[in-house]
Length: 227
Ligand code: ADE
Image (cartoon, rainbow, N blue to C red; front, side, top):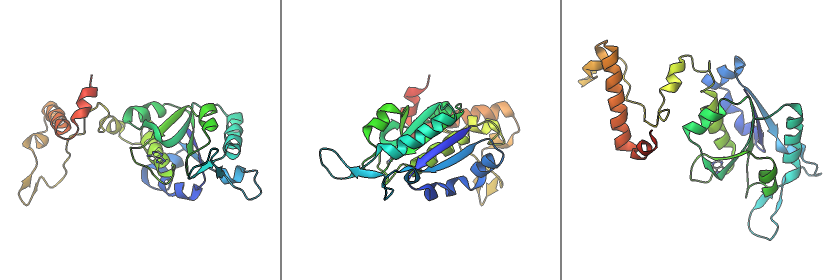
């Protein structure tokens, strides 16, 4: 998978891909991330990428030209399955959306700033608008990092034990069950006998019951979505 990220702060997006699972995914060529500095595409002599809103009002708007030129260049090089805009008024990110995107070959992610981008970019290029939650960030970069992380870990081969991604919270609209490791008894805090029994079917049944109980308690709304 290839992900092209358009940003006015490329430095901000370097670190999330430098560590642990994401950096290993990049090193083993399961994913290729390319950061594009929108400012470097600006035809303005001061390399400006924003301007005042038509009609007045507080806040600047990201201009069309540098973003359009960057997207056009990329589209001439390869076919894209999605051009995603990170914005607080987008569709709220959920596991099902990440699952869907993880099947794509090439995607572009545009990070918004200020009051956002000129609406014509959204009308003519953007295929999906994504929000990572009902709060406003200073820009789309952190949202883009969250989106990339949630997609990349689903690419086959990225997580060594593939079943582990399938048993994540939200994959079946249930929260994940509690997990334990050694010691089985820590100063009197004990682990359920079932987990130590070696009886795989009983362990699975116990985990399923715990996942249901946890979901009922913490996120009953998820149960309404369950088929
Ligand atoms: N940009 C600013 N706030 C955002 C949010 N909540 N999600 C995605 N992009 C954003």
